[in-house]
Amino acid sequence: MDAPRWLDERENRAWRGYRRMRRLLDLELARDLMQDAGLSEPDYDVLSDLSETPDQRLRLSELADRMLWSRSRLSHHLSRMQQRGLVSREEHPSDGRGSIVVLTPAGRAAIEAAAPGHVAAVRRHLIDLLTPEEVAALGALTHRVVDHLAGRPATEV
Amino acid sequence: MDAPRWLDERENRAWRGYRRMRRLLDLELARDLMQDAGLSEPDYDVLSDLSETPDQRLRLSELADRMLWSRSRLSHHLSRMQQRGLVSREEHPSDGRGSIVVLTPAGRAAIEAAAPGHVAAVRRHLIDLLTPEEVAALGALTHRVVDHLAGRPATEV
DNA sequence: GCGAGTTTGGTGACATGTCAACAAGTCGGT
DNA sequence: ACCGACTTGTTGACATGTCACCAAACTCGC
Image (cartoon, rainbow over all chains, first blue to last red; front, side, top):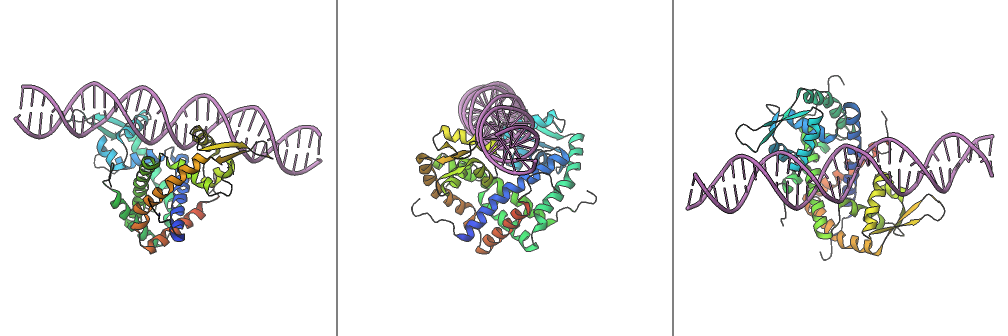
């Protein structure tokens, strides 16, 4: 912790810009999504992951891992979505502990109705503002950071 | 909403990478900050903004605007931080409605203790993983998006 | 100065996320 | 076959964020 290397001008600009963009983009996308489709971002993410899966169904732990959510959070959130008829739960055929999350027809309809608008919003507020080079750079850079951080579930040096 | 332009391979990579990085980086930084300094990210942000201000004090609405927080959120959060002795509230001298948020000595000590470790973590998990060109690109791109989104408080087409 | 309209900060109810604990099920060595 | 260790999903208590609403104070045209 001795003699910290502070961020220089350029680094600071990147870091502050990132955090500000993060916040604004989130607000905007969440607002659009809620207005257009009545879904929150977490709702959308759950439905999206489920709909991309062969049988529209996933084991709860599998879905939690993909989304980087805790099982607790997912379980709570699924209960709320189940209440609204977007997903349902089934028993796992072979593992008595397991729960399978299934996309209902209503859930499928919801994600299909929401997706075009959401993608359009992502384009409008992010992708279409960038040059192709910047898109590529963003892809490269984020994946590098993700790889660096992946598999760091708990305390590690 | 007709014929949506989906994201192509490269765009999708950037978008997914961004969201995944967002999540992982957040978890990691929050974890570090809590372990090392006993502060949440929102705590850190409040203290940081306050400490960068001439008199270590800001009007509540001013602080809320800078942070892109709702006043309600800030008010709630300040109450909790006040409880812990990190900030205090004063009356505004001329505007009877106003509240001034002031950094307490304990708050200043907390941010000064936390900052080096936090900056180091930002470096370790983000900045130092990027080339100088990428840092510059990230700065440019995020600021463009921020400018695009700024001043879009409510419903607007 | 007055009064309608705005701004400010705070509040309570509620939605969402986190954390620790738990019951039930599975696994693997013996 | 059994027992201890682990895994899975759920729950309740609590922390945090959002939303709608409110009272007090300010503004500005008249």
